[in-house]
Image (cartoon, rainbow, N blue to C red; front, top):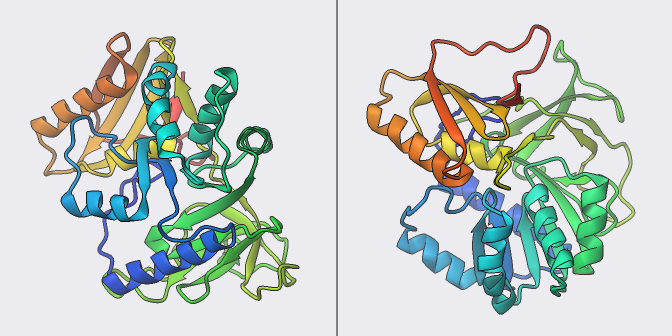
Length: 331
């Protein structure tokens, strides 16, 4: 499932073949940073976002084989890091992968508390990586950051290599196009809509699928020598972060992973003030009271008891005229 960064969750089927191709392409790109399957890593992403949720045996087995310590990206408050930094240090990771804001928060914590974590590489994904974030992460962990872009629903993938001059795509798994608003192809370095066509997912074919991201293509071969097509820039993945007075933060990618699990058609989070959050939900016909209560419980867990959470079920959520819909807002 995609959480729907525009606030519209989308569930779809994916074939084992398509999933296998995507995993292989991801491992290939991580190999450019020196990663080999089974190297110790920490993943700071969407895992364990639901409190007390049981992890399946197959997931536990996979993480064990990968030597992967998974941490949620949304709960990286100082208290949480105080309680878990020992686990990270004991794991002695060679690589960290996750959301830029989460890894940036960890890097600042390590710096401010005079800890030491030396890595071979950091992989960032899901959000726009800012230059200041890259600089601090690289300086603190004494390694390079490899930024990555993924569009699982369209089969799209683009990854930095060791040269860090654009993003290599994986043409074996999907076709990339950069189009204008009239669906015409654009030339190199002309900004337009990123569009993907999945070549393997017969379970749910995505043909010329536009996830809402903007970018530009590259017109030359990378100096690394690889002939894979490249995106020169990727725009539009910037995700808002909500922070409350108690130090708790909500990150956009983590929100999409939570809300995709519920029978809702659309959602929006509105920070009213530093101690209050409003959630708008457009339910599907199968939405239940139990889901309403579960959303309330999950959000209280992540925001903290001191934050007032108001959930309103509405018929429609409108975006501002001429603007792209934002699923995280501040009053």
